[in-house]
Length: 317
Ligand SMILES: NC(=O)c1ccc[n+]([C@@H]2O[C@H](COP(=O)([O-])OP(=O)(O)OC[C@H]3O[C@@H](n4cnc5c(N)ncnc54)[C@H](O)[C@@H]3O)[C@@H](O)[C@H]2O)c1
Image (tube, rainbow, N blue to C red; front, side, top):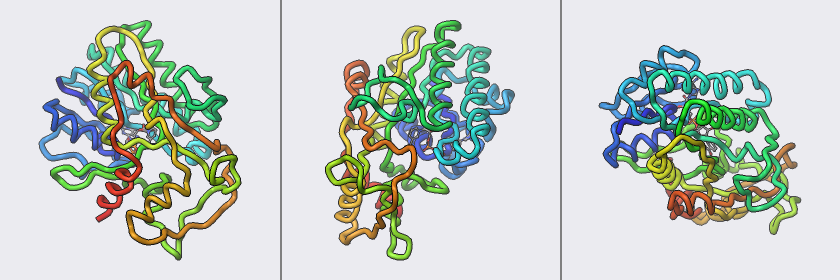
């Protein structure tokens, strides 16, 4: 089976490329390298450098493919508030183009990178896929819109698809070419930022007065290797027209202070941090209910916070 990995030059997509090829899948990569890195794509892989906004480039990338893993997109919450038009254009318009070209090419299997940002402030914890969707920013709104578009595509045109709603993805993969890791700029994710914290530029804790055990926000983290395992299981589960949504997390959570403590243990000294005011729009606790992915896909995350921290640390060299 040949899988087109859109966003295959990015953090999560490049990890997917490596694991898919190791498992014997043929892979093509489609990426405009706007936030990804061409050197993440192994030599010998079919790599079409092009944009989701260009249908003929998508058509070229889809040639010979049987399925698509769609990671490409814009994913910075803050940027999405400042430039909503960019997010609606790339995430929604770009995915519309992809779905249209998949239909032309008669490719009917799709795995989509959705996000926990679709849920917004949770009313019930842990968060089930059936929870209400009230995104608090344009990023979450565009992921939700794409999920709705995929549902309609499945109903109207027989697409067989799964949307995977990631909570916080972390960790790294040591490939034969070296570490595949987060190289975002700006980096907004906690674990890499904690590991890069210095006394001159300490990591900020946004709020230490939340209604949680230590006053800091609690988030659910999933290792990128476990995450890709779920993608491959989801791909293999696609057998008939329809659209299923799965949460991917660990089913548990860690506070910001617990992440800093785990990183301090890994480094062997206290990581510097600074207490800062809360950020608007941050929920206190986000934890996934992952029982559907466990039950339907037979998926089980196996790597804990310590592994996510130590792999990220090792990947920074
Ligand atoms: N990292 C997380 O914790 C997380 C959480 C939830 C969802 N997601 C989703 O997972 C996916 C991958 O995230 P990531 O962390 O690897 O981000 P990333 O920025 O490293 O990867 C995204 C890739 O998409 C490419 N891209 C962007 N716009 C494009 C366009 N118009 N045409 C073609 N390619 C384009 C970028 O160049 C990049 O390589 C995204 O869709 C993101 O929204 C990530």
